[in-house]
Length: 252
Image (cartoon, rainbow, N blue to C red; front, side, top):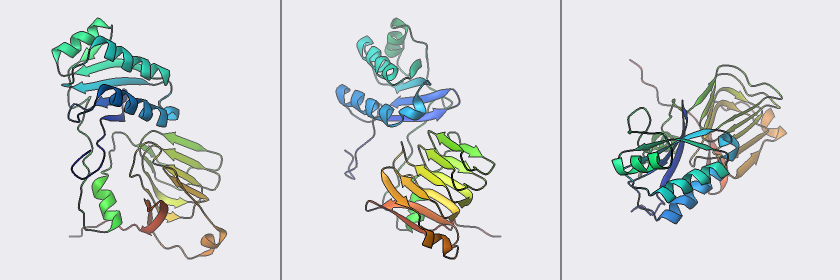
């Protein structure tokens, strides 16, 4: 638990060009059973995205014994994920990886990154606070330069950006946030893995929105109302709420 009262995340899972990057953070104190339980929970939450994938385990300066590394490998295998590489900053842990027959390498800017900072105490609007606390990571996002048409279903473990519309009968399921530079008339599910996800669009007229476990269903009355302009959907007090989405612009 941090000084703000929020639970610290000892395990993070992110996408990378070479597969999943699973990080057991060495800067967050955690008992081993708790760490394994958190990893299991995260793999279960994203199983539809992770199934059949490869993972690179980044340990920083964390020291592991052979049984612990074998346990991590087994937990991943139970969820359909192959442990491909161990990224360790200590020679002792690299020796353990070698002992259990796993490839290993040193940490670098290319294969690891610090956790996303959460900015506390913002005093701006809700949309500004969301943008400040959840910076967009283009290295993980899926970018679609087309309209998602009826009958199409898009699934991605991180953020999804659509330069086009999401038509009725189309569905987007994202581990993170969904940003649509167009009109949403289909179904959007965001935040299936990452907390604090948002849904943004130039026009939000969906049949259904879901953020995490919170569901909102569109109505025919809303379809007949004037288009309010760009909107951002977030979760507040257990409900999905909309507000005007007006990113700051700088003119010279």
